[in-house]
Image 1 (cartoon, rainbow, N blue to C red):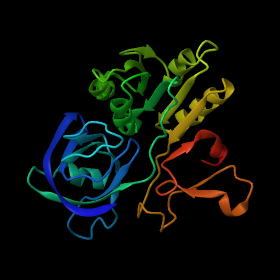
Image 2: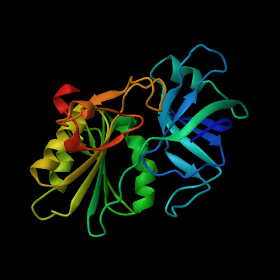
Image 3: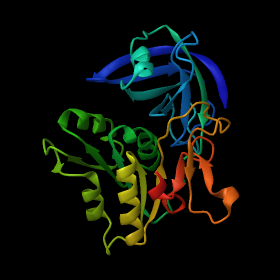
Image 4: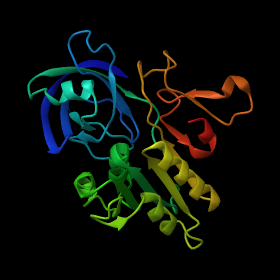
Length: 266
């Protein structure tokens, strides 16, 4: 983990309210699923850093880990912090803390990876797809404009399927419908990697468990510190021992075995 001032290489709007941010940084070891905490302002307002998943490692190819000359973050403007970040220009600097968290475990050699995401949940799966270069990416969006995010996955060696709620592109409906088609009695050696809204994760976990398929979920929670100190991102697990019942998304996760999570408590 490092805390550094990083120069902004680019900060471009790729879709309405969606930006890709390139940061210059001689990165330590990064694995798919890691995230950064970014201070979006040089002042104390806003006070807290914002968490962002690592979308790309610049100047790097997978060799047990990613190491490169920088990182790319993909983010959506949803509040004051991301609005401030979107107004940053190339040449300015932001303070970053990372890499943080625990990444996705490797699939077994014969397992078929199924990566499923809803909305901005696609971010941590980009590095995973680049690493694995196989399997299928299932992406759920509200409409065709949001579905444009997944274009960056084509050419990584993975099949890509899209579901939109309005049916404007791909399959009409929820992305979990595509997951049901991919997990069949004929594909018992699949493994699911999921990130997105809680409702989607809960349903993906249910489908996987019903078919006897392993499922790893990357949880999204509000964070203040990113290192497990503030206890603001606690999630309830199914552990019987009381002292193990709660885990921190930032330090124990963000990736968990879906069977660990008490989904009714989220």
